[in-house]
Length: 115
Length: 114
Image 1 (cartoon, rainbow over the protein chains, first blue to last red):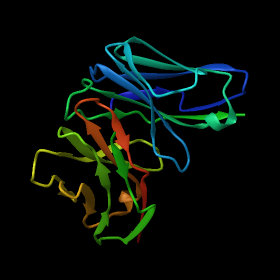
Image 2 (cartoon, one colour):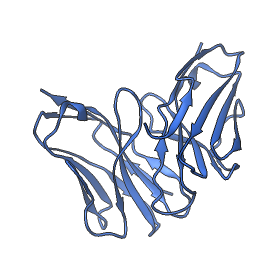
Image 3 (cartoon, each protein chain N blue to C red):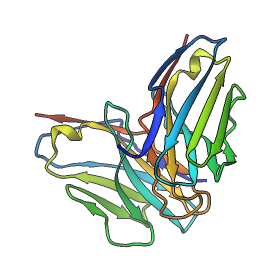
């Protein structure tokens, strides 16, 4: 238990569906992240939020829409996804951003399958 | 830009033996930290050990230790007295103090044989 909780753990959705992934951290951290883990690829950083402000968007398609209503919650809204978007989506948090020595803590991930 | 490279896609070790996982990195920054994360079949990414780049002393956590060679930009993980529960994918990662971005290597799958 790392203090970062993701729901749902598994999600199957059609290409025309709209769904959301939720992340909640109970660590009092100010920075939150979304990572994508596909088979045979390194983890890809998607979005970074610091104090509810998006500070990084790594050329992620607009069919992925993040939302950070407060420093404890992070959402990833999904719309008209493609089968190649099927992957494990990992949420993470850290005490602050851009501070050396930051340890990043991960949730258990949400398995997404797009059919 | 930072890059992290793990050249061993798979490794195996006999239970109770020692194994070393390799990692090299490239960065132009002076302020950075290095990490090893373990990802078991549950997919939970668990921090194993971390190393401050400004420290010469190698980090150690129980059976896990690193060999940090700053000039060579090498950061290997040694697992002593390997246990069945050590079987997992291991990721080397680097974080920059300037950007706060954690960059991962490709991962090494470790098999522990009884």
